[in-house]
Length: 479
Image (cartoon, rainbow, N blue to C red; front, side):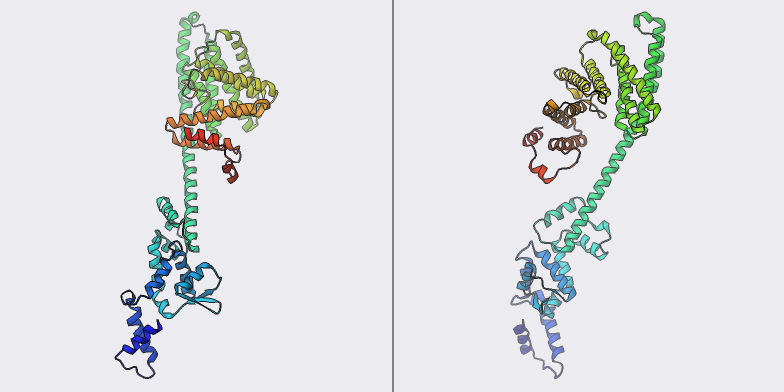
């Protein structure tokens, strides 16, 4: 560069006035070297420096520019013997002086100025304008951060590159903001889902009230005219309708406490009875009583109020009476899918009642429920039953049975663990066939956590991922 400038001075026809040598050389350098340097760079000098920064290692280019920008703004920075500082020195744009890194000379500082730095970085960064505005506004304007596809593309671009600190900070802030927004959206969707379920439960409760009144009127009319043929008394009709209303009221209380799934479960039972999906009167009564037992148990646990505990005890008495009446006619009960489902539910409730008192008896009832499930599954698809009080959007009693037996029956823990895995996979397969993708995604994650034994933790560590059960993973992939 010195030889080039000396040659320009030698070739100049102008006589340099004494005392104006510095100004003359400055003007000469500005007109013959700096201005329009790209077209005057012969033989190549500045383009060589530029290429050493940008093209020698394209993955490092943004980082080297960022480092050079620090030197340019600060006039000098401390030497730290990093590879990047060495790369800048090898490019010829900076020099080490007195343990400081400085721009090599004023010509380089003028040509490779901040405008050149920003323009060059802008051509490298796919997010240049957003980044520039974010920096200019003191890193406070979240609207400039990247989201969605723009963030994905920027992350892919940055994957193999050595970025400067501010680039890393910009991308990290973008990811953090997107995670916050996704979390907020997930929360909003969950709140909307709860609101939707609350509305559905309230509407269903109103429908049940109306249906109960209409059914009472029709059955009372029929009973009055042909009491013997119906084999039912007016008192029994009134008793059933009263229990349907009571179960509806329990569901409403649970709904008010945010227990939407449980509320819908009991409204489902009330609807099953109202729609006459069960023909046997004793089974209807037992089903209503089993729903009241579970409902009052939920309320008693939630409130611990004396009157709820009293309601629970009364419901237990009525439920046990219903089961005794069923025992008398047990041989007459056909093994239809609806009846088997109902018997599973009865034994599940009996197990729940016995569990605090006698775990051995509880296990017996749970196992009896599983026996009925096995009879059921040999003929029908559990997830598509018309009368489905075991599995729907609100309850998964089959999974609960396997979990309880896995916990209580120590001799066959592995057996019930495998049954639960099989049930979860079948449920996931069903949800995917129904194209209920949100629920399927949730069930897929539940299966993964269960397989890894991390349901309570709610997430997987790196060790869990490395040690994940390959057989379970293959079963997931096969769906």
